[in-house]
Image (cartoon, rainbow, N blue to C red):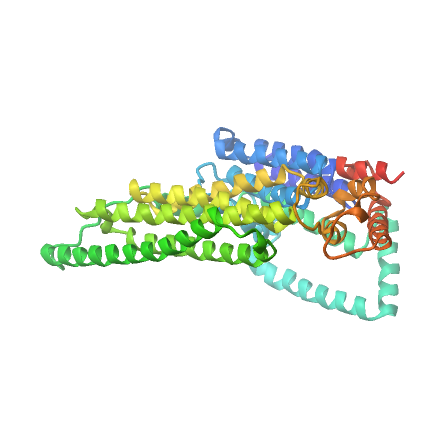
Length: 492
């Protein structure tokens, strides 16, 4: 059995397994089970990846997030699992790939080429009987089929008689094949085929060659002597150096004033009576931080992009750049203090946690930006480091059940002001349902805003229970996860 046949067999087998695990099911134990087969398939089909630590890192992230789906089944864990599994496929296909976003694109690009692998071998030789050019045949056959499918779905949704006739036809086909055939089911299987095919079939996107052209360190590019006079070149570089120095000092003075006001009025002289206005204050501070960091990165990218890194007086410019980065870090601390005061006063919420996570990514970005300047590293190196930091943050975020954490904290009595019970009932996902039912007598006694009566609270929790029970009906062991099991026990 040649390599092409083996890959095709794995794709078809994994597609059937995908259908068995996930059709009309939620993500749970099935995710962990499928993830193990998926990663084992990558390990078997791409032997070169077995010595690639980036592949193993994303495999670890994939298994960890799959486990978190079984434990607390959060949306963050599901998103992290999907992205991590895609990146693992990209690193499996290209063992020399370094940039995690390129690995994601390596996988995503395979969606377009997946159907073609059914009719080609790994060497690029087409199977007999299909024709010389697969994509020429695709335009002749698949494209019209896609257009007809779109109109078919439109007619199916608009005409009840046509929909009934269509259902009877597919039911007959299903009886002949002894298989439950329906339009949604066929589309689901097709989706699984593309999902698996993009991972198990190799796709040459040319990204590794592009990465090879991007060195980690900058080099001094000297102008051709025939076109430029060296003294003129140095004069222009000296002028650029002076302009850059003036610009950074001016930006530093501007940011110094902003930081000084934060230190005086937020760090040490905060007015407790202004706690109620913290919401706008935190959001405005976050926007300033984002704009400031982007400005800092953009300015420093531009200034330290080429030969200015090698100018004899660049040490002075690096010193001013270091002050600029330190002031941005100080601004990040100020926003963190604002956000913490907001949490201390009003309690936890998704966005408030998001601000803290973002600040962690900001600090890492500032550190790597300084390393880029100090060690004359390239932008490709900088983006690669921060891409991995974002991936790590994504996996970390998936490991915490924020829904339960938020609910426990807000009901613990820690917030100094009103508790937003409406937020806990209607905005936080049903992962906190068991906590709401355990504390149903406590909720009406809390000092809350907006105000809710005891009847409104009970009605909201009851509605949340009905939605949860409706979601769980008809599911098998494949969808089991600890969070839903805990809610199910609470409702008995």
